[in-house]
Length: 247
Image (cartoon, rainbow, N blue to C red; front, side, top):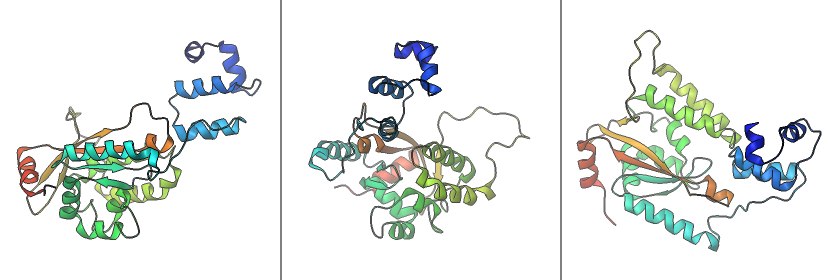
């Protein structure tokens, strides 16, 4: 009933479409997917399955029409320096890194970064799965690992190709146990998850935020997100202010 009201059609028609007794119009199908917040790539697939032409472009980042998008991303990354920030693609490729993110990766996992960068953009999952990767200096593996897995598994509906690496990460994290033991009293969680890393500069602590484009109309643009790391304590803030090189 709620969906029918949002789409401006009868509940009976919704039922007929769902059961295959009626065929939706292109306009109804687009409104329906918009109401359910379906990913743009899936919208194109569903339109084609229903016999309609796809509605959304999928331009390469190298296309001239994407110049303003790349400029916006670069400006956002530079503004965030010296705090780390990185542009992540749909397969968790690291498409752009600012000076802070590059310094952090070179400080924590230099060998993993070098190996993951061979042949193209480094991949965040490769950096996590590498024997000398990000899981090694990560001090709160159980807590942060559960968060990583939840985020990655949410992506599997749109990116099934990630399944093998996500399950490999789950196996790597399994020995570290459940971060919420059932035998202990329930405690209030912190406002945000803090990632804690061991480094030659002492413990570095960060919390994360993500940025995406508002109202994207291109599949490539919709798939991009910027991960911002913020210092969670004064020591981390000071280390990055001193260590991260300025352009």
